Image (cartoon, rainbow, N blue to C red):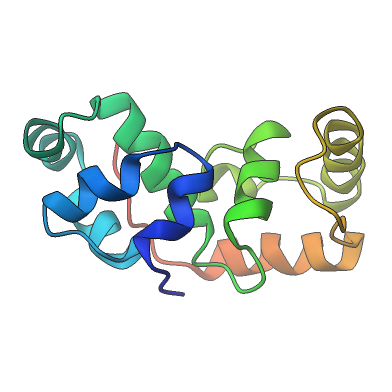
Length: 135
């Protein structure tokens, strides 16, 4: 799915303006520009953002390609220990849903927790997504 880059402002405040100044207005454009270490380095020079920050938000944008995963659930997944789509493929839906609930009790990242069935769909979708980011 494609989102406006402003959707990522909740993850790292102020990044939308830096990315817009580099001509990046959507998560799809961000994924294309930050897909590999060389691209992240070039983008870091253009935006003033650290390559590690760009990798983190690119991974968030990558998770947001999964139907039903917006900025809030992408952040919850990260807080539960799932940094990448590649990692999500190998998770147990029941264990991940429990971990997300536990993390959310402490951090209050989302109002409504995803069901175990939704987490299972995300995992299956992650298995079908083409790889976008290299490390």
